[in-house]
Amino acid sequence: MMYYPYTSLIKDYLDISEEDKSENPAFRIDLDCCFKDKGIKGFKNFVKAELGLKKIEVLNIVGKYDKGLKLGQESLALMQEANLQKGKANSLVTLSEVYDGISRYDEMKKVARAAHSIYKRLKDKKGEAESLSNIGTVHYSLGDYKQALKYYSRALKIQEEIGDRSGEAVGLNNIGAVHTMLGDYEEALKYHSRALKIKKEIGDRSSEAASLSNIGIVHYSLGNYKQALKYYSHSLKIRQEIGDRSGEAVSLNNIGLVPSSLGNYKQTLKYYSRALKIRQEIGDRSGEANSLNNIGLVHDSLGDYKTALKYYSRALKIEKEIGNRSSEAVSLNNIGAVYDNLGDYEEALKYYNHSLRIRQEIGDRSGEANSLNNIGFVHDSLGDYKTALKYCSRALKIRQEIGDRRGEAVSLNNIGNTHLETGKLEKAEEYYTKALDIANELGSKEIDSRVLSSMASFCIKKGDVDRAEGYLKETSQLANELDSKSVTASAFCLSGRLQSLKGELEKAKDSFEKSIALFKELKDKFGLGRTYYYYGKMKSENRKLKEGKKYFIEAKKIFKELGAEGWLLKVDKELANK
Image 1 (cartoon, helix red, strand yellow):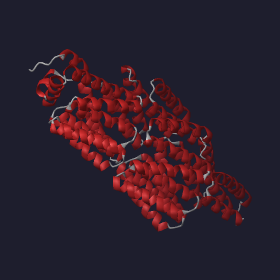
Image 2 (image 1 turned 180 degrees about the vertical axis):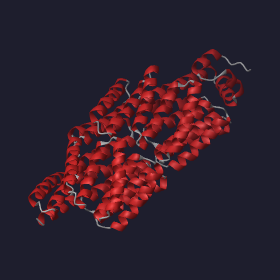
Image 3 (image 1 turned 120 degrees about the horizontal axis):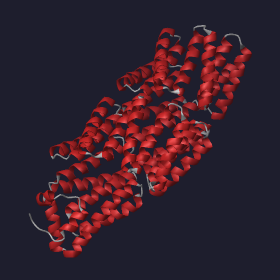
Image 4 (image 1 turned 90 degrees about the vertical axis):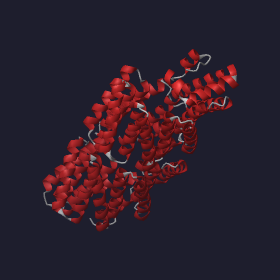
């Protein structure tokens, strides 16, 4: 084995085995260049650059990307000065991860490709796999899941060939994450489970916790909240045991998602606040912004829009300061949603369009579809159904192109709802059927409940009692399985409408009143307004005009406050007939 001066120092600074030193040609070439040509100065630059790269890993974890970017550029310059090719590639890979943190995906792809080219030339398979993985992450972050899968699969193949078990587990997790986004939950579980097995075998507890968390995400997406909670809690326990505070905050955040989906916002706030406290303590500014956004979402769901706006604005300020454009677009979108809920559609469109513009600039296609969908909702609320369809159709097209099956089902359902509002029943059924096919394929209870509710509403409007009963039964069953107050409240409203159609007025009255109580508890104004409208309609159609008028007036107050022009027109039409 060739001897190099300062070997003990190098061993302290680099995580490279004796075997790698002797067998890795890239390492030998770097050291030859560094010490024969540059002497002690080259060695010092080499060590300084390597230390810089190690520091960047920590800076990335705590969201200090501005410092990481500066340090990464300095390390790259030092490696270039010393003509250290592998060091240059390592610096480029690290820089790509900094660019990922601040959503500068063009630069991320550029430096990751440059690193891949060097690693390939040096026949450094491990580095080649890592750079391919980072290119995959660019596509994943931009919602181009098919391309992400292609690069992640290439990286995994190399990791398996060279016996890099740790890298193999990372590759399996990455592929699992893509399948989760594509709604292919069975495949996602398969890959995450394989990753978990490897991580347990090699004793990597930190990565084991990450895999448990990923499996929890799949179960959450499927609506299996008890299973999700089990995996999230296991992940949290490991992270607390090993002192991974950043990971602990992630687990607390994930656990908070479960009670939020079940309408238990008090419990959710408890977990989100603990996550926020940790992130502030460790200086994780990116994570802090994420937690602020999550807390804002809870207040938004509770109808406390002023407090929600306060948290969203704090998150937005941080995201602008650290240059995270992807997260900035999320906060702008959330602020737009507040104004949307308040009925200030002009302000809502301003923020939604700003969010859309950023997402288009950074190439975030998944986020772009989300923004287009929200803009479509605003126009739907304004009764401008033609424009609503235009935006929702653009969102649908993107989701189909990137293979986002879950998003595709949501978009199809939304377009069906718009057609239903305009009385185009055949068109509505066509879109609902497509949405239901995808929902059944995905096996997601949350998506299933949404589409089945729409189908039940469609059948009620059409007067098809038998089919309506079938869809409503499935919706109610899912509401019980999900233990979701929101889905249960909607199911009670649908039951009231169906029972009214069948002439079962006492049962309908009981269902509507249960729906009203739940929507009030959830502070869901739009859901409450719709239930008042249908309750008033039932009363009026059964000659209880005075009582019907009372509920129409209550509905009108809410829709006026929200600025829901389409629903206001419906209420005014009913009141004009009384």
